[in-house]
Image (tube, rainbow, N blue to C red; front, side):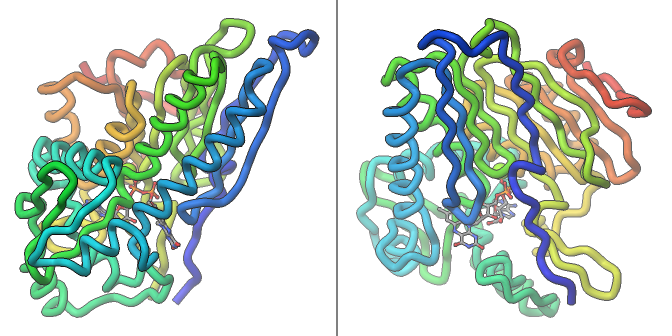
Length: 338
Ligand code: FAD
Ligand code: MG
């Protein structure tokens, strides 16, 4: 079995930043990078308020990690998963992220399902001890999954006995939204944050132009193109981020709730662009599970986000709202969805 591949966030999504000039306090740059949520996190803040804000955002991400970790015995998630059958008291952040993620579980018709955690763990994606579970085991684990049975009431969360949840699909996006909120409160108006493939931008670049976000080529080391955005989250879910290989076949960490196997419905990378990092994070995982046809159908029906899908046949599909802002790399052909 090959080792897991976790590309550094820096390689996953490249945020190319070009400055007009670096004189004066408004062009002061603060950079911060650290590991949290098992992910490389980096932030670049512009202006003289950046330094103080950078310290606060690190504290905030570490605080959220302590709440949302499935393996930390003091976390809210641990308490929920070990009070199965009863009510677990949680912090407002935990109640909020679970409530909002459940909405996307529902909207995605169950493609996203936070109760899949026992299946994810059985594949070894927690703890890095990969194995291919037997079909019987998967079937029996799937009996104890169904997001509709997770209940949030005020500051309590309950899951039925035998159920366990995890927020791996939406927590980095939620953290990104909190980070944007902190930077705004601190008076920062231009910043870019990368949480392991989740890029969130605050405002525009200091010279007023758009940020250029490179979208990783899921088949190689380069980019399929760059996207120009301001004040947006750009979140990618891909089968190339965390996986193991056995007998030449690749098994990744995004699971199809219909059978408990890694989702293999035609998409190798789904990027969602929108206002909320949490929404984009949850939705990119959901689209990856839905596959090409269902994702396009979903987008046409809702149109409350933009997307870039890369199919397993190499096709790149871009939704109408960002078509003009996306510059494909040389040789990349783009299909428009409208
Ligand atoms: P995404 O597509 O955003 O999410 C995929 C993740 O969602 C999977 O890893 C799984 O957890 C879950 N998932 C899979 N299929 C579905 C589905 N159909 N519906 C809903 N959810 C699904 N990893 C470690 O190895 N060690 C750690 O110590 C560690 N600590 C963490 C602490 C926190 C607070 C969080 C949030 C994550 C942690 N992780 C850890 C997990 C790691 O960072 C995840 O791989 C990451 O959250 C997945 O993000 P992604 O962008 O790669 O994929
Ligand atoms: Mg996600």
